[in-house]
Amino acid sequence: MFAIIRWVVWPLILLGGTGKDGKGLDGLELAFEKELAGRNGFERVLKDARRRPIAVAADDYLPPQHGQHLVLTIDSTIQMFTEDELAKTCERYNCHGEAVVMNPQTGDVLALANWPTFNPQKHG
Image (cartoon, rainbow, N blue to C red; front, side):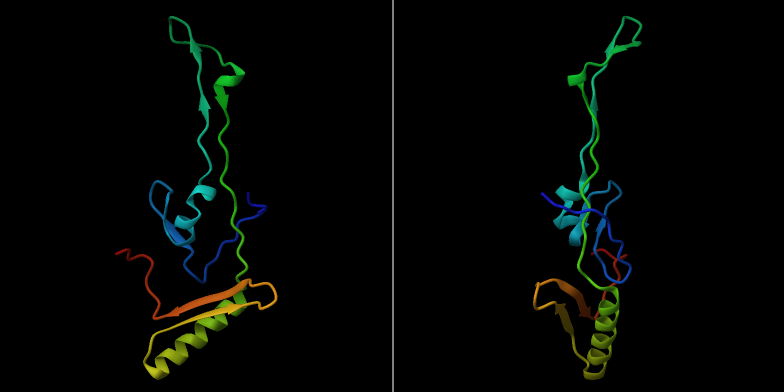
């Protein structure tokens, strides 16, 4: 189980994408699809001859459940600095590169970057 209390929206890096149906296609959205998705509810209603609802038994109702939240340890300031420095260095030396910044005491990932970047709108 996750003890996660809030959703973090992250504009600086691609966390993953979802399809029109809301299912994860890549990144964290795909990796944590099961935890993020939640579950549909269910209701079975008894009806009379005119198809009017009569009753719903307690065991014939299951409320929908929200998916869990995912909290990241990425720091927006460190992320922006890492992306900028990696881009400058790779452009200067005409190369590709990746960078990972971690907290050595906890192992938390504070920044992730790669160069060249890509357009997340172009799935391919």
